[in-house]
Length: 234
Image (tube, rainbow, N blue to C red; front, side, top):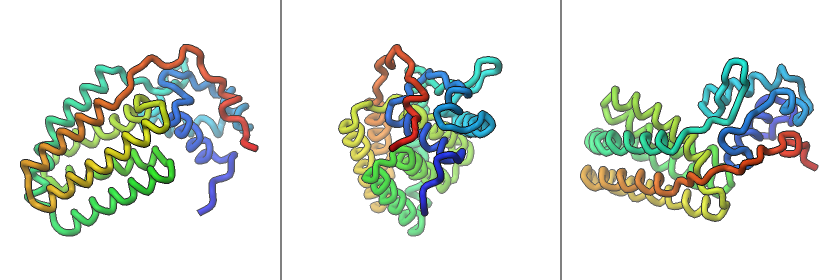
């Protein structure tokens, strides 16, 4: 499939998200509609739905009379998310081990393969989403709807946390996320063996390691120049 034309809202969305993932738009950056429109060479009417889409995905915060800013979860909020996930996901994966069918295990296997392919291609946004899908499928098939609903919200918030607080160094980011795929494979091996206790232990360790890799260093004090950042590529 060919890339979307540069003037489309989808192309603008993709470039803004890529800039967040690459740490060129740090948390708290104000997204001024006029400046974004000028940077992309489009009207404000094309920028607004992009900002709404980003807000719906909790990547951007829209505030009346103040406009849009890159969402900025606090360190405490990030740690609370991982605490909740450790509490519920160890139980969910134990339930999943008891109920999983062959098709469920095949789906998890494909999730890991797709995630590895996305990371190899440098598509970090898709990789993070696929990683979340791995966890959500376990929750969906665990047969505990209340915890599953809680986890779905937590996974959405985790994606934002990983986008904003993963290491800003490219090699470190690749190394860390590669470990994530290996941990998913180890977890899948325990699931195949129907070892619920080991799967729960590996799940907790996996979430511990994800949290430990977060970088809460203050972002640069100077806001990026939006027009220079999103200038048309040669």
